[in-house]
Image 1 (cartoon, rainbow, N blue to C red):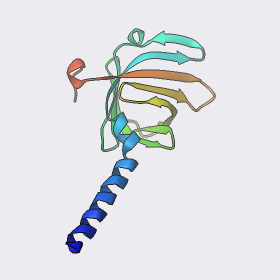
Image 2 (image 1 turned 60 degrees about the vertical axis):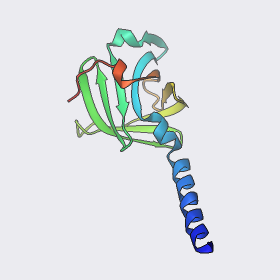
Image 3 (image 1 turned 180 degrees about the vertical axis):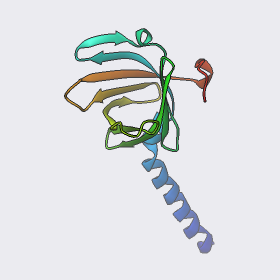
Length: 135
C-alpha cells in the first residue's frame, strides 16, 4: 500500500504545481473583442474601430483581426505584463502592456510606453458569437 501512496502523492503535487503555473495563462486563452480604447486621453468605442478581435491560444500564439487586417504572432504573459511579438512582419518591435485586469469576462490592458499612452478594454466572446473568416 505504501508503494502506491508515494507515487500518487508525487503525481498529485506535480498536477497542483502545474495548475498554479498556468493560472493566468489559461485565463487569457480565447477570443477577445475590443470594447473601448483610450489613447492619449481620447476615448474611442471599440465598434468605431471596426471589429477588433484578439484570439489567444494555449500554445502561446495569437491572432489579431482589426477591421480585416490580420496579424499573427506569439505572446508571453509574465509578471503582470503581456508581450505581443508579431511574426507576420519581422522588423516590428514587440508590444508590451500591463495587465490591469484579467478574469473570465474582461481583459484590461495599459501601455507601458510613454509616447502614446493607451488603455484597452476587451470582453471575452464565444467563438460562435464571432463571425470572422479564419485563414
